[in-house]
Amino acid sequence: DIVMTQSPDSLAVSLGERATINCKSSQSLLYSSNNKNYLAWYQQKPGQPPKLLVYWASTRESGVSDRISGSGSGTDFTLTISSLQAEDVAVYYCQQYYSTPFTFGPGTKVDIK
Amino acid sequence: QMQLVQSGAEVKKPGASVKVSCKASGYTFSGYYLHWVRQAPGQGLEWMGRINPNSGETHYAQNFQARVTMTRDTSITTIYMELLRLTSDDTAVYYCARARSGNGSPLGYFDLWGRGTLVPVSS
Image 1 (tube, each protein chain N blue to C red):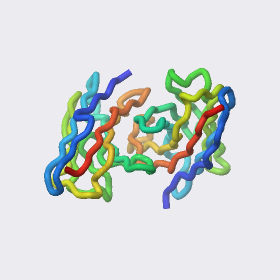
Image 2 (image 1 turned 60 degrees about the horizontal axis):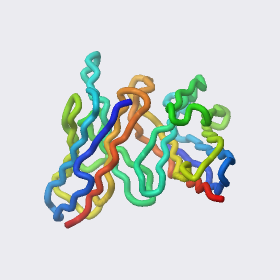
Image 3 (image 1 turned 45 degrees about the vertical axis):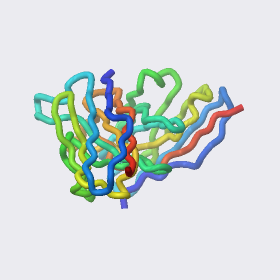
């Protein structure tokens, strides 16, 4: 199974400041046949299902704020919130869909400082 | 609009089984794989398996292989997840989620989620 890790476990950022979350996979998520990284990011708020933010590591889902961006390739990935707003308070998960079983990172809790 | 509507919460006793439903609407049911993901209280997300709504083909996570069954009823665009021999460790919110891949591959990201079904297991 592919193991996903995230850092930090939690972070508190001032409003308007940048938040950066890291995700690492135990093996490469890059398919050489199509040059795509099978990595997604989700945001989850209390009492709600996860919400897709980014897929293929860096493609923002329609309707997602352009303050949110994903980057990285292979085994190392980053989610960046460029200017934190109150509505960004949530837990963020990375997930690999390169192979089954699909696996998620343990989550990073983002709060306001 | 596209949505996945799940059945309501069910309280279960240890040793019992639970069957959760997930009704898809607003899109072509047969066009996307559907998955089940669970989340224990205060914990992360755990993938349980998937079903191809078109063929009924399933693929389960090893952890659940022996006691989970996923089925579908195309006439009512609904999938089901049945989990047997429940223990307190199965207390969780169970989500269904649609996987989008762009080419019909089972390797897709989850772009549409149900609101979840809470299954507390307690004696």
